[in-house]
Amino acid sequence: MELTTAKTSVNNTGKEKDKVHVFAPATAANLVCGYDILGLALDEPGDEVVMVRAGEPGVRLVKITGDDGRLPLDPTKNTVSACVQLLLTHIGREDVGVEISLHKQMPIGSGLGSSAASTVAGLYAINQLLGSPLSKQELLPFALKGEELACGHGHADNVAPSLFGGITLIKSYEPLEVINLPVPKDLYCSVVFPHVDVPTRAARQMIRSKVELKEAVVQWGNIAGLISGLFMNDYGLIGRSMKDVLIEPTRAILIPEFYEMREVALAAGALGFGISGSGPSVFAFSTSKATAATITAQLSEHLKFKNIDSNGYTSAVNMQGPKEF
Ligand code: HSE
Image 1: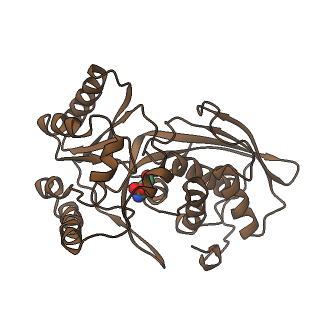
Image 2: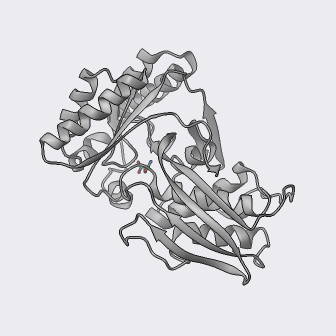
């Protein structure tokens, strides 16, 4: 998507600040059946950005923690600083100078929207620092540029929920149209990240580019069913719709114990189970926090029994998106 198509009306409504500290949430994209079009925000984990105004113009990345040295400090290569610079250029504020510290609090290459959370935190931070000249809607195209830089494709199903909170539907990419879907009140998420690295770029390249019509019919039935379930508060329908006949059979190969974990999750009360984003994290919905916690614990236990380390998270759907401390 071209930034020139973004409707960026600059409203200097708020007071400019010298320092901001922002959290942006991790996300579970696809929601099993909705490749590249559905995603939700989690309460945890998430990334933090501290942004301090500097005397000299320009965007500098002064510190990254929690990345085991894996992310570039070069401000033109790091998605956070590159997107902040893009935004400043686009709104004609190249006079502004900032120093950014990025604190990664989630695994990279995990299928939890790691790059999206960092980028959204950076964009939200610069917007807050400048007194909120742009709306969240107007920040979205910049976040998409970050995804393009991070994995070679500007998919919006991580950045949109991280930015808007809740469950989002990318109704279309050209033009970009994002819809916030209703979130039934008892919906809880279990997410487990088995410690194997699956870069999104590679996980996208392995998917076949053509699908059979009869499989497509199954897939769009499930997408429609899932969305209907969200509108109707029908948890059974939500669960029955969390099935992916197009992408999962290919990507599951990269995830240790994937089908065994599905059995564990469903036996522990999950409504449905599948891959979070491009994996290797897995994701389940359930209807109570206690059940979600049990599912998370049992999945981690199962992996531990197979000598695979993991991180587990139990979360409601995060309705807020980024927040300033
Ligand atoms: N929709 C993207 C994919 C999400 O499945 O590749 C990446 O987290």
